[in-house]
Length: 429
Image 1 (cartoon, helix red, strand yellow):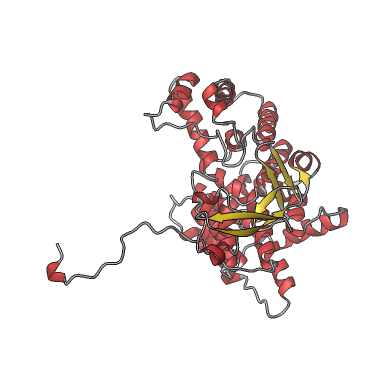
Image 2 (cartoon, helix red, strand yellow):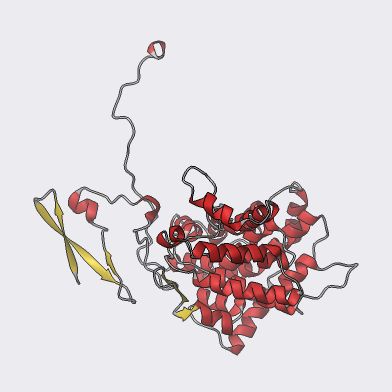
């Protein structure tokens, strides 16, 4: 094993093991650092900290590479549907035709919700955000579909995984129907996974509806693009809850709450609101760019830059192409797309954005696609959650089989007062 030397206070040297991953990247193993030196590392936001060893997703931010289980995101979007990619992430390999058909059948069989759960929807306030409903209903599933690990642990977990993948789609669609004040539409065996979701959202007893094949294809692509992204905020939340022994339902609910934040999954909603504001203000893109560069102006361009990618987000390229396909089928241009494309061009030619590696990310175009499909703004992050679900499940399962199984417990640098005595209450100012 390779080792690196660490010199402490110029006196004593300690050996730190070096771990080399399958792509040849080197990492310092600091598990015994505090034991050997009495020190910990300081890394706000964990940008330089590897919290686990994973076989699920490979991401190279400098080269713009994203792979699930070794498969390039571009190839998966081109040759697979979302059900196949979900199977890949959860089971570790792409299904053959028979396995794919069986999995699709299982997802269909477990897609109905317990009748009593439907009463939950009717009692949420009309103004409830769909993400709050999604998180609450996700953890509520544990009450209706108990996990009995004493019978057959692996079978029970597999059943729980299947239920989550199928029922979360139904919950998401029901949250939209609740928001619209219309009756729920149950899933149907006649539709595919994505077509079923669109039918549950938009089907009407008074207006003929058939899921648009172009929209179904676009939804498959978008869900694949969002299916996993290494140790992001919401995935880390899922693994952290899992490390405490939390069941899969509770861990996914935690992931949904983390994803809801505007700096994470909520960014796609923020992008469309930003583009609409620029449009309402006259469409002056250069003015928006100059405002974003002004240190004294709190204004930010949403959809640019990424914590990991230092080049163009590979998912953004696919999202842009998908956006063009959906709008072409619609037969008209969306003025927000025109603004987005001009904004992208101006920003990419600006030295300020080049120096800071501020390229469009996946959120930049997805909102325009959802808008073209008739999906309301506050449902955008729900769509993200549906895509990210198999990734969350895969990471929870990976932790479940982790030989270390250590509870996540970061350290801190205490910067508060030193020890002090408690004065009598009469003496306190």
